[in-house]
Image (cartoon, rainbow, N blue to C red; front, side, top):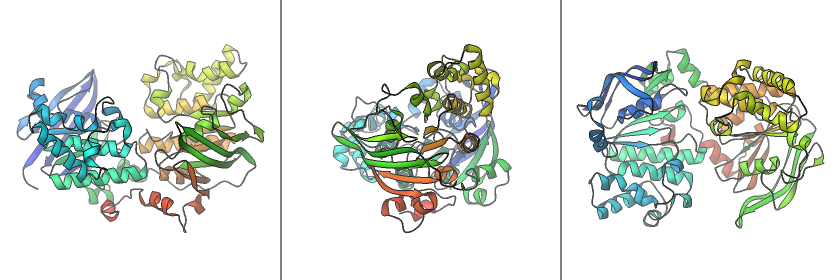
Amino acid sequence: MNNQLLTVSDLQVSAGESVLVDSISFTLAQGEVLGLIGESGAGKSTIGQAVLGHCREGMRITAGAICFDGVDLTRLRERQLRAIRGRRIAYVAQSASASFNPAKPIGEQVIESALRHRVLSRQAAIARAIALFTQLQLPQPAAFFHRYPHQVSGGQLQRAMIAMSLCAGPDLIIFDEPTTALDVTTQLEVLRAIREAIRDSGVAAIYISHDLAVVAQLADRIMVLRQGREVESGETAALIGAPQETYTRDLLNCHGEPHRPRPAAPPLLQVQGVSLRYQQQPILRDISLTLGQGRTLALIGESGAGKSTLGRVICGLATPEQGHVSLAGVPLPLTLRGRSRAELGNIQLIHQHPDTALNPRLTIGQQIARSLVCLTSLNASQRRARVATLLEQVGLPASLASRLPGHLSGGQKQRVCIARALAVEPTLIVCDEPTSALDPLVGRDVLALLRRIQEETGIALLFITHDLQVVRAIADEVMVLRNGATVREGPLDRVFSAPLDDYTATLLRAVPEMRPGWLEAQA
């Protein structure tokens, strides 16, 4: 690969007195892909945004140079940077649904950069967008141009964002965790789209992720980051085959040993014939399941399969049209309002995103104590003691009770959510994607914490996830859902063993493997 397109030299990004990115250097040639990996807070996105000439509020570039096609971006004014952003350097964000304007057609947003930079006429830009939709295998490309974001799937919207980044013909694209929130089959189609877009356009790319297996499918070289510093870097095959640093080896083995299923136990949760529709659209279709005391049942399937909706029905947050839910042999009212304090306390919920699950204006202690106020008769001093015990149970110091969520890391916030769910000593916790927003090492620690708590308390877990590696790490039994219906269910080893139905086989094949060339083999 000739002609260095980008040279980053001794980059330092600071926030106040804190150095967030420290002495980072790398080069990128035309048509080359560099992967940046590491846990949350490693500085990956900060580096990617710095290459755009952008720093988040409170941050600034305090040292180093970012030379793009011979021009140091750190010396340009904002007006000069705007002429480069979107035109020569494009950006693909993690969440397409949060990045598109819901009030404008998708196609109009895709061509906006090409029109604003006067790269193409409107007619040529529309033709370019439709050609990109075709290349990215979006359905009915001409009609897709006029659809609104809510009218397409998450995978289709993420591919539309790739089309948006390519429309103006950039030289460099920064992909910032573009598949993190997607299920495995949707992730596979988006990864294919990214690979083909890079190959067909010859664009250079920086691919940011905390998933080494995903980065390995796209990157020519990988740089491993931790706490703003480079840990090691090298050609993809060499780095995966023979990592030199302990931290890199930890990333390679972040899922640990497979879970050993627990022995059978008496039924705790029973769901019988649950069906639910939304605006005449079936969401759940005659779902039945049984979860034993102290065991873990994983619900898996693509986005829209009905996993979270079923969890909400069990918690009383969604009311089915028909069916029954029982706990320990006692039928539960289907509405939250109809349940007693004891019934509310017996089933607790851990949400996917700890940032949105916690009130930023209340202290950690206040939030954990909230369910104690509502569902128990403990006095104030007893509640404070209980909060301290819960924080220690989830591996956090009791002193955190006086802090606000903004002072905690993502992993610490999720531990707080677990403590809150444990506060009233439930018999069942519904875990709705509790590790999908966390980097792999933090997610591994959270899974280990849940397993330990389960062993200590005998609590049962209904674990909703699209990550099959997580399923192998925690589940005793598995239920596979598709379009609101049960496809397959049973013990973990049986569900994931031959003979497989077509859908389960597709899910298993879509899990990225830690080897270069895996993605090409999935064609």
